[in-house]
Length: 492
Ligand code: IMP
Image 1 (cartoon, rainbow, N blue to C red):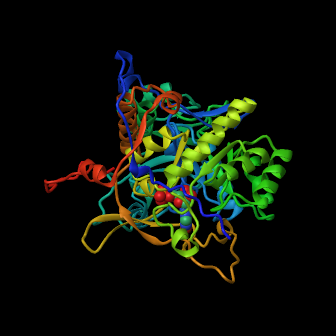
Image 2: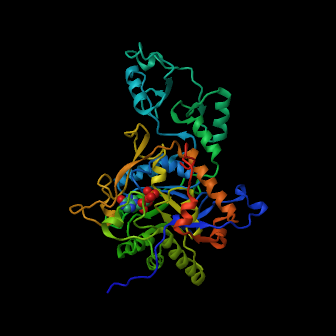
Image 3: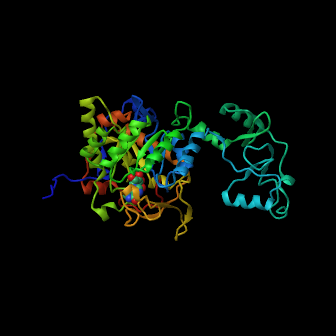
């Protein structure tokens, strides 16, 4: 007979942090969200903010991965794409030099203005460098912007007839400070960087520099390049993918599986560890037993969550899964016991179902070190999905799960292509503007909650927080009641 446990599985939404004394030096501005992502070279790879983007097609674009790293977290590229596409994504993040853009559209002087108008409409750019060959590393001969021609009369003219040739450039500059000073001096929002021979090397946009200045705590490697993660599956053909990702300098490998408590996962970790130094994050698991299995297999961090992703149908289809609060609590206890017994602390990542800062702080308080979000990040301009209007005319973005037919990530679910069934849906989420504006606000809300709980660091939160399960009636009181909202202040 199956073993029926007497325990009850709880959601993060059922717990609350109790206030504890906030010291004078424990207000939100004193709270640090620095955390351990995974073991790394005898120490830990750290993040300044505990945020990672889900390894999902709809979430982690290059723009999202760059933003996550600039904001002190990390993006993880999904496995559901070709090895080449995934490695190109990793390259683009690693090549990104705050503000110095090296993959920008360039034009040749004999292009028609009509074509330029179409390109501007299609991709929203308003400024193009013009090179002799039309290619990026050609000789810079001019700049054309939407202010240089009249759309009504100039469509049959060539770029050469309308571009500005008297251009201010930076020569062989590769530091931000100098680029910024030059842009201030020239009063420009755009600065082409050329070699001493006039070859276009990169382009600096003031708006990107401003982002960098506003977010000085980027997650960077020892060569000051942004860090990025990439997912693999446990299928044998993904060994080639793993090798390619390591060669392209992915900083972390994430094994993406809905159920990580498998011999396949153990074999994959063993193979990865015997060939490369790159840290391996394993998962997903939801029990202490699963955690110990992956810890013994050599994982450098473990991801928790099953059946609780926002568009996930695993629990309905397969009846497998667990409330995320109970999963984190049980796994964190096993992790702490292991740390006591062996001296090895294995970071935990709470993956999925995090609807906002209250869920996030609870996941951290119950023992997670880092958080992984899909839905919440899919809402931002930087995610992969298209912005569109729904039937009510509201701006939304498409969000599709990895187990949906659209992503068709059969390997994540140990499924075959012939008998593929969906474990996730396709839907829409509200459009929420730029992640650069909203994620710092969410971080501030978490800091504020930590300050109320009397904790200044995530370690203190793990050790000192007082967390209480709420009755359903107490939770009703905790929500808005007796007032009809005219404006939501809870939207991210
Ligand atoms: P969300 O933040 O609640 O949207 O959850 C995102 C997480 O859901 C991902 O990081 C995955 O762990 C998980 N996930 C992604 N796609 C699927 C799916 O199709 N079914 C079940 N879980 C999924």
